[in-house]
Length: 350
Image (cartoon, rainbow, N blue to C red; front, side, top):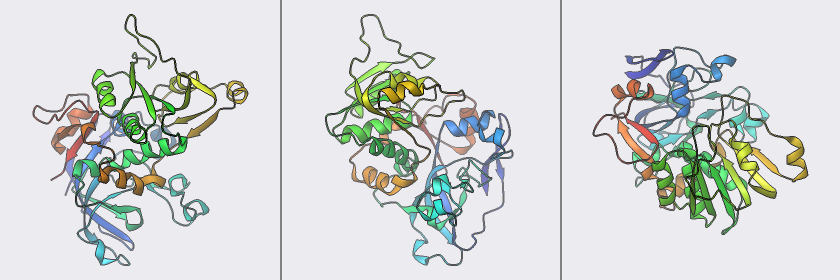
């Protein structure tokens, strides 16, 4: 079968690899659609932090935002799964430790991450091996594009739920990539007043379409970049989401929080993010750092499938697998694959 394999920094190609064989409690999925995210680009460039820790090494097969159909099952799997359209969690815990038994497999110290950590092959292939405990059924009405958005949407929804803001309360989202935009959509759908800071004019316009009350431009360093006469955000926010990979983004958000406010950090920077503990304590601030959307996967599917949030505009292009190496290298998606200004590029596998 075909799979996209990265053999070294900026060395990727479509190769023939063996088909997966399901073991006990496992299924094989025929992959239909895969989303490409910043983590995938970091693996392609060789800058992903898991290389330094030994959690990842070349050759590597990426892809952790996906949907497809169950085509084979191992022993112990209910035959009713065969033929089902599904997506799946990226975080695969050991299922034996106290964290896994309490439903927190996403922070299991012995976990694998699909296409990311400890060699579990990713979804940029004709077929994907998954434990049946990590897959979720998709409604027939849900498009492949939305099915492959569930994984990032689950993390965005968890950000919003963690803040627990009421309708009408102010929220600052710093970062207008896929996670920030999806968080904007979920929060706005709940009646929260959302302001968004981002670098791309197209993404900021999309933020407006998704329900943002106001948008603000950011410079290359991630700080505010206001045109002449424009005003900086003057609201003291009840909650903020740092969804940018810029190291200073958490600090920018904290500077605009009310005393007693709550910051959710989800963007990971390659550089240290410096926060002053004395400031946090004297202002009675709450900090939440979220790794995964595992706890909100099922609810994200429900929200997307119900139409409560229209996430289709986030899909900016749908490319073929053979186009991926050029796109990961920084090229624009091929002519004719563009669907809009959304930041998310997906790969159609069939």
